[in-house]
Length: 257
Ligand code: SF4
Image (cartoon, rainbow, N blue to C red):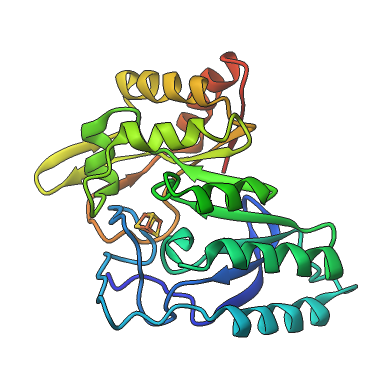
């Protein structure tokens, strides 16, 4: 499966299940996924970081494109509810991520004051103070946590460095609750091993971390499109709702998509 790639720096607006009318920003290459994870469910396909050939979004060009798009949709039905950093990989990898967040907030305030500046991130770069500070400025700081068990985290997210689950959790704790947790639930088989973050043991371990992190709320969702790993099963809405009830019982809002 080749995977789906966004072919521009600014894309949409598209309707997002989680964010409403969302204007997307892709800081990564338009012809290749660039990420420090290699999630078995990634809609962009397998990670293949061709070092040296990666062309990232240029700050000035991006600012111009975003301003032009925001002017175009201002006052129309396409005025965004969210300006969302997502795209072909992990946005916080971009070396000017912090500066680009500042540019985006400036443009949002000028042209689309109701839009929530949002980011979908994998929480791997939180040990970098500049990245963490930038993330504290966004309205919807959505960070990935797919398991509370190290071996499952490794099996699902396949970090390309030796990033441990503990270090990810430490970064999440640094937001002191000003974040949203996103978790993709799945079960299946990959490289001859069962991968399943929906068992009682898994959900309990994950929930313990969620309780410590105290996010504004938790987004629970299943796979929606094709996955690079075969034999991955889509979890039903009913099953996700049962997990959501456990989150709610712990006093934390949960949304199922
Ligand atoms: S973190 Fe996101 S972009 Fe990176 S591999 Fe996982 S799903 Fe894909």
